[in-house]
Every structure is written in structure tokens, then in C-alpha cells.
Length: 441
Image 1 (cartoon, rainbow, N blue to C red):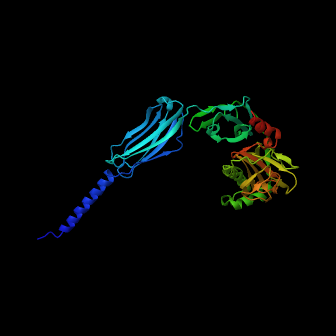
Image 2: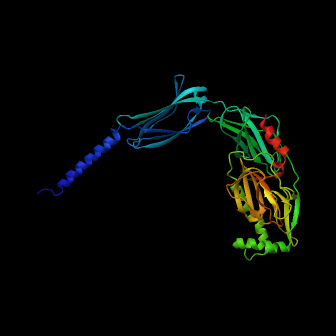
Image 3: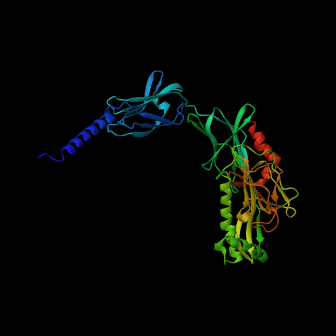
């Protein structure tokens, strides 16, 4: 009697045979070459060059990988690997090339990267590129005179470099601040603005200039500088019962967690938690700035206004003989008449124009390259976000919104999201000494 599964067995045998043949052809008789994908710019190889390469072969898999540099007919192997395990179809490799350690000289050379697969045809892909070995780091040229910075002010550092660079900037206490470029005559000058902390000293304020060229060579220079100490005023502000009872309810309605709290407790929260939250929000707003210098010349001060509070003033808030909190004033309070017109201090782009906690109705203008001005406690705002403004353009009117005790303008300057002393930016001599003169050396 014939086996009823005979034809199924025969069909299965043919299928397995076909599958075996297909796998054999796919894995061992295929003719497709592996792929080589280098990352980044390989045209320049510096003193410590990182080369990233991705190898792939989707059929028989990778078998032999190799990278070498040829110079003056001498071959220097920088990477080699044999892969005995079949089926490895992708591999990423990082190679660190140190030309001086493998007897490569500055000058032209040829980079060759190859990959072979496991096919019986030994399919091989070769990637070649002419390269330049350059192990000379850029020279940083800084003016001989030391820089002078004031506590709470803006520091400006200008310098030149001896060759094109890929990255340049200032490390301030391990925080990197990129530099901007300016064409001055035949020279390209790099400069960085940074906020000097209120209590900076020679011991806690560290700086070095950094530059990395297109080949990856790096240089650092520590500039000479002095920090001018300043005496910041201490002041106590008495909060009247009328002020607390009339101004705190609007904050209680805006923040449910304050409902039911006393006016004194509400003020303590506003002065501490809300103030800190608002300042962080301002920092976030000022993280993104135009790469272009938008401002021109001395910044304007509110016309006909008296100074009510200065930058850096230390305040203690008192009510009924008790201290409700402390703060450091991070701007200048200016007052003239009620609802006085407020002008843009310089050219720029509006990046914020709405209510902002303790600052009330607020406008923030980006002047480019990390420089911002802030106008707070406004009764009205006449500009919109993303609107370009010109120096002297009216952007709003003074008021007493937010935590203001009377009609005035709170004016601040910020560099890189950090508050700095506005008095410097109102002083044409300071701008001349820190920009015009520093750029021409």
C-alpha cells in the first residue's frame, strides 16, 4: 500500500533543497560588496584624530576590516580586524589616529579603508581619500594688557587665532561660552561676552580661552585679568499692611496653593519660590539668541527718570517688625510720571511680551549674541513677540503690575541668561573701551 504522505514528503524535500540552495547562494555565492560609511570630515587629520566608520554587509556578512594611511610610499595600518563568526552584518568602529606616534609627518597622505565579506567571491569594498596631516595647534593671540572686570558686570574678551578654527570660545569655571566673529580691517577677531558674578574674586573666577582647528588640534590660553570689587548697598523695605492686603489677593487667586494663607505668608512665597521660578523662566527665554549683533552704540536709559533702586542692592523685607524674606535686586528701578512711555534701549527683536509673575507685564528684547534687555511692571505693552524694534521705539508704558509698590520701570540687562549691571551698557566710554578698543589690537 502506498504511503499517503509520499507526495508531501517529496514536496518537502524539494522545498528544503531549494531553501538550502538559496541560502548557499545568498551567503556564499553572492557578489554584493560591503558598504563603508565614514562619519565627519576626514580631509584633515590632527594630533589626536577620532575617525568613526560604519561597516555593513547584509548578505554573507563582514569578514575582514582594515584602515591604513599611506605617506611617502610607507603604509601605516591604523585598524585591522578579522571576523571569523559568520553573520555579522554591521559593525561600528572608532579609530584614534595619533600621527606623531606612527611616524606620519605634516603634509599630504592617503587614507584607505577596506571591507571584505564572507562570500566565496571575497567581495571587497575600498574607500580612499586624500588627506592632510596637520598636527600644529592654532595660536591664540590675546592683547598684552590685562582685562578689567567689575563684580556684577559684563566681561568682554577679544582675541585672534593664527589659522581657521572649528570651535573657539571661553571656558568660565568649566562652562563653555562660544565666541563670535567680527571682521576688523584685515583681521578676524573673536570675542565673548560673559556675566561676572556679583561676588566674583580672583580665586573663584577662572577663565581660559580655547580654540580647536579643523584638524582637531586644541589650544588653551589663560588671560590676565583683574576684578574690581564693588560695595553693594543693603536696604530694608517696610511692607505696609495696606500693601499686603491689597496686592496679595491677586497672587492668591493665581496660585491655588496660596488660598487661605495670610498676606505675610503669601508674600514670603512670592518673594522666594515665585521669584526663583520667574528668574529661571527668564533664563530659559534668553537661552536662544540671534547669532548676529543687532545692537548699535550706547543703550538708552529711561528719559527724565530718577533712580529708585540699583543693581545688586540687598533687600530685607519687613512687616510688623518681622522679616518676611530677602532678595538681591537684579536691575535698576526708574521712575518719572505715571504711565510714562518706555523706549527700547537698543535695536533688537522682542522674544517675550506678556505677564511674568513678580515682574508683571514684561518685555524682553534680544540684541543678539546672548545680550538681552528686560522691561518690567509695565501698565501696557505695545509690541509682540518676534517683532523687530528700533532704538527709541516706544514698547509700552510704566506701571505697577507684578510686585511693584508704585509706578516705575524695572530695567535689567542680561548676558547669556544672567543678569548684569545696566550702568555699564548706559556708559559710552565703557562700550568704547570694551568693544571698539579691544577689537583693534
